[in-house]
Image 1 (cartoon, rainbow, N blue to C red):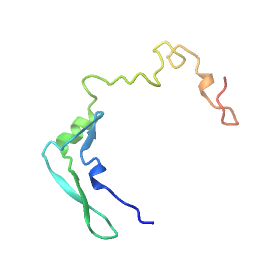
Image 2 (cartoon, helix red, strand yellow; image 1 turned 90 degrees about the vertical axis):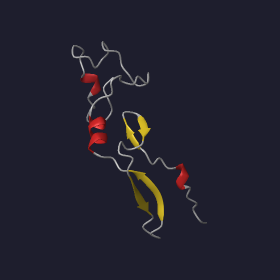
Image 3 (cartoon, helix red, strand yellow; image 1 turned 45 degrees about the horizontal axis):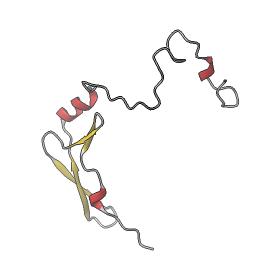
Length: 94
């Protein structure tokens, strides 16, 4: 059985602050299949400006609505957190 590979399905941009985008300089570099030395894609070549944008938080934080506890929930600074620590068996204390 031969595995097929579709390079057009690859993301070749930079993933910064939750979004795919091209490098700020527009530069790319080739990615080769090590078995055949065939170039399979050209991916974004991020520079210092891209790194700075990736390090800084976004202006508006993205709110997914999933897996978020309220600020007054069990992980707030005033709530006990013993239930978060696993027991000797590795199960959380409920």
